[in-house]
Image 1 (cartoon, rainbow, N blue to C red):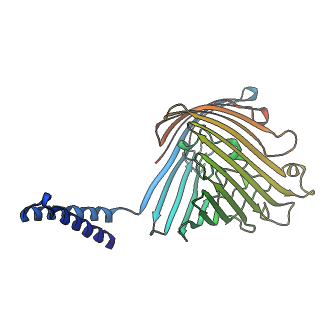
Image 2 (image 1 turned 60 degrees about the horizontal axis):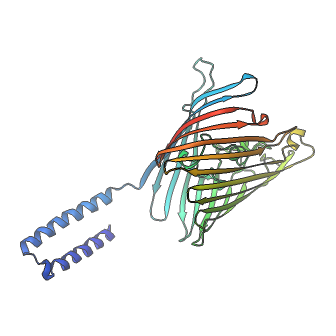
Image 3 (image 1 turned 120 degrees about the vertical axis):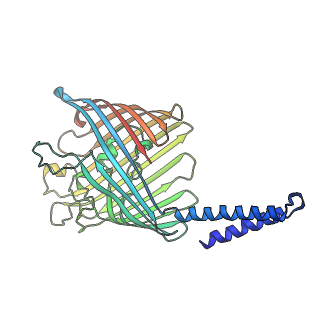
Length: 379
């Protein structure tokens, strides 16, 4: 606490000098009284500062209601505590800190032996647990489990930060959000607005199934690691440009089968002018599938998707949006999926949001049309 003592003495010296001026002359008794009051106040400030914790807690959550109608009279009417997340972070010193994210999905996890015959819907996940080291004024290294630097939602997916009750299907099925791995990442930023991330991590292990290949760092096979690089530019007010490239030597962690390497490229832009925001994103996977693989796998060698979203803040508390999503995870026959979303967000507080939207899908995407309601928060 040496720096606090220096500041305390400097402040006391300044007060002493001020009180010594003719216009502010005081008696010795009044001066001693003021000195004692100042010392008591300074001691209290020091005590409060010493009691400040270096560990912080935060989190977010969202409750969803889906009311959708599908083909042949199928319905999806679901009320779901989709996510409940707790952040626990700790600062060891000015240069080393720890971040973590602990999540429960769908409210609960059970052993399925209660005799009800119901499948427990939930999962318990540690999506982040990494130590961050500052290695310069503009660079840092993360080591542990962290979110892959790709897309818009993968790193920033708290409900008050995006439009729509559910996360958009393009980032969910193509990127795939939420995607975390174990490894190390070097990051840097410059005053010009450019920043970069370079990571070496565990990779996917799902063959041609992108979303199904996430290992979630649970005894993840690390026979073939993945290298990821991102460049971002935010040097113009209201404009964000970013692109990510990832290469993985083998998508099955097994170099003796029919599925080999994969390259993913993603790019997005966001342009905000006054209360209007336009967002566009595109992601593309190119998977090396040998001609000895199944016809279905061969038809999944290219998977891609993109969306355009326009939003407008009617007031600081109300915003409306429309989004067109197109994506294709490959396969036999026509596999091109499409979904249109239109809706409204209401923020009674900047960290609390109430959402409503309507979705319409083509038959390849499932042909489920209807409305969604949600409430979300972050703290």
